[in-house]
Image (cartoon, rainbow over all chains, first blue to last red; front, side):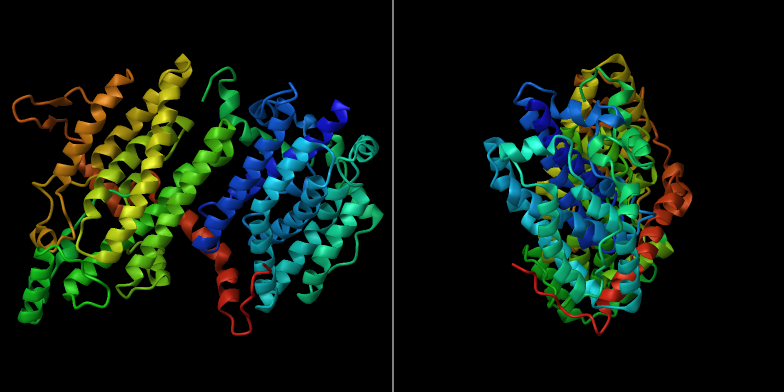
Length: 254
Length: 331
């Protein structure tokens, strides 16, 4: 059982850790100061959420949050490839669309966890949802605002959507040992979460003329595997950066 | 984070003439208000030069905050653990927030944020010299967060008592936040100073690199500083560069020594008779060179800002478009 729990918690935690890493790249470089500040807040929240998830495992006698984040090898990470993708030379449309797709998934996932039977996780989900509410407000406000602005903005959002769509879909790739997790009542099956996610985002994306039909199985095949420990080509350099200081003197305290 | 207002000779060209052109009665009343300790508010009458110098000062300060986010910002994704990563993100976010606050304060004087940012990008408007030096290692971020922010607090708590209301109020709030940065910086420095030999060496190297920029931080010595009598009378500038530098040395040199660090100036000592710190010439020629655009990172810093400006242009354009409609948040 603990193995299944670790897989579930690491999938959630690693998503947030790496998403926080990518969002943090915007601090100081956003399109307007207010967005530097917003992305800094969201990045802090995601990073803090990752830490809180890892702590659930620490409380069970497993590794510490710092060990999970800074001392694991690449293949031990279980994040989806969506969060690993770079910001592609500071493409704000990519950052915004990813933030929208990801935080919609967070809404759905956390609501399911809140109803789950594993109390520490359900309690944490309840706490995180209170912060996530503002991520979702931020994301939907911007998608609707830019989605109804210039042709250029629309084209950029559309191309970001095309690029990210299969990756976002793969957020709901079934986790290893998912049957055990669902039987224990910790979380709903990935397929049902994906359905809720689609219901949440489809009206907004249709209203802004950014909706795309579901990706084909063939497209999905190329972007899946994150939950199994397969990493995208972008992960290695990210991990190197993440651990640059901590690995320079592994036994030191900082 | 911001050092002292540096006044170059070209900044005060035709100064006296312009003040002389002001209505003498209004000028006298204005100066009497300041003398009584009243605050000047945006809608109040003020001399042309007061407005011009304040815009320049607040604008430089705002630019320093956004440029200052860059050297530390590059270390967020490399911070060594959760605790430091979260704190550094919050700190750099604060700095950008200060810029937002200060641009707003400057806008009350009649110059828009866009105009100010354009002047930064064209090189017309300056920012604190200290951000033209690189943060080479993690230890540099600790030294910056401790000592540069400490210097900024000395400067800003002094200037918060200035005569212009919106600037003073912004500074008060900024100082609250900076005092947390200083705690974070000091804590990081203590960990390095009491850590492994490699960490201690990293810290000493960083201090060696940053000592000169820190000495430059408050601006050139009073003896060569351009005439600032009027600015002091108008309470735009509240203490001289040397006064603030002395205050900084008094507060922080003992703390640096206490950590077993060496300050890279063999002549640094406090004269027991005068109570003043003596130090070697920190190479003021370098200071003027860096102000003139020839520091180690001037070009890079502006290039990064221009890159961000270019990359974000379509977003700002989209926000201003007539067909854009205000979106009510969903909750």
